Structures are given as C-alpha cells and as structure tokens.
Length: 188
Image (cartoon, rainbow, N blue to C red; front, side, top):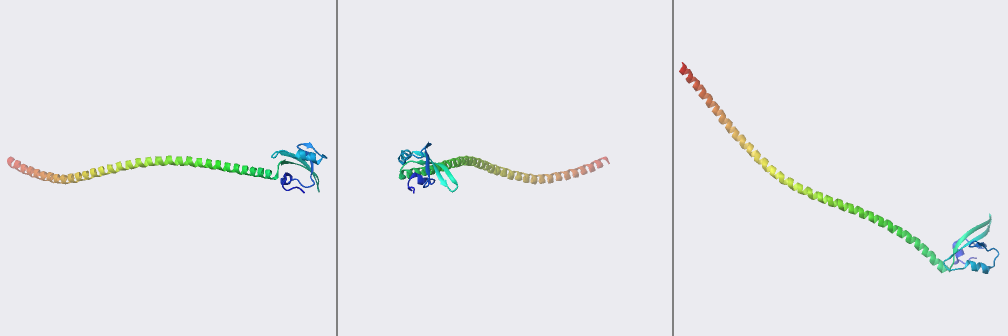
C-alpha cells in the first residue's frame, strides 16, 4: 500500500504493484531498491520523471508521471502556493479588468462633464439672449402702443379735417353758386 502522504499517492495515478521502468529517462529495471531510492530522492521542490508499467485486464499499460520531491508538508505548501498563485492571477486579471472598466467610466465621465460645461455655456448664452429679447419686446410694445395712439390721434384728426374739408367744399360750392348767380345777374 502507498503512503497517502507521499508524492506517488498524491499524484492519484500510481497504484500498488505498478513497476518502475525508468527514472528521468534512464532504464532502472531490476536495480536494487536502495539505488532506486537514491535516484528518486533529491532536493525538495525538484521534480523527477518516472515511467511505470501496469498489468491490467486489457494487457500491459505503460505511463509517465512527473512527481515533486519533498516531504508531504512541503508538497502541501507548494500545492497551496500554486493554488494561491492561480487565484492571485485571477484576481490580478479581475483587477486589470476593473481598472480598464474604471478608466472607461472615467473617460465617459470626463466626456459627460465637458458636455455639461458646454450645456451650461449654451444655457447662459440662451438666458442672455432671452433677457435681451424680453427688453426688446418691452421696447417694441411701448413703440406699438405709441404708434397705436398716433394712429388713433391721426384718425381723430383726420376725421375732423375731413369734416372741415367737407364744410369748406360746401361753402365753396355755395359761394360758387352765389357767384354764378351774380354773374348771371350782371350779364342779364
């Protein structure tokens, strides 16, 4: 039975009765257990490539496995470090994505701020024009009222003048008739 804390058991591939054929590419079949041990063991954290042979119901099966050398605690720490490194890479990728999104939002906000400033400038210009237009409307209203009064006064005066003209015409007509009558008397 394999020691559950050893690299071979932790790999999940190696089983009891598997035979070692090669270590780091060198044939080691029929070598002593001490020689095999000396080749398998090494500096903690380094790797060893091993080729195994397994007899199954279907026949002979040969496979390779890369194992990390070291005590179970060391391998566990390295495994945890690898997991943490993967998680850190994911987090860094998420942070970069968020930074990109934040930058995009910042650029959008800056654009919106510029648009708002333009809107405020246009609003101020509009308000200035509106005040001018209101002043001009008041001036024009005053002028229209004055013109209406003048027209009314002129109509009144025109009516009086027309009446005076008609009266003059009647007087002239009367005088003409009188003169014609006198002329006829003088002639006659």
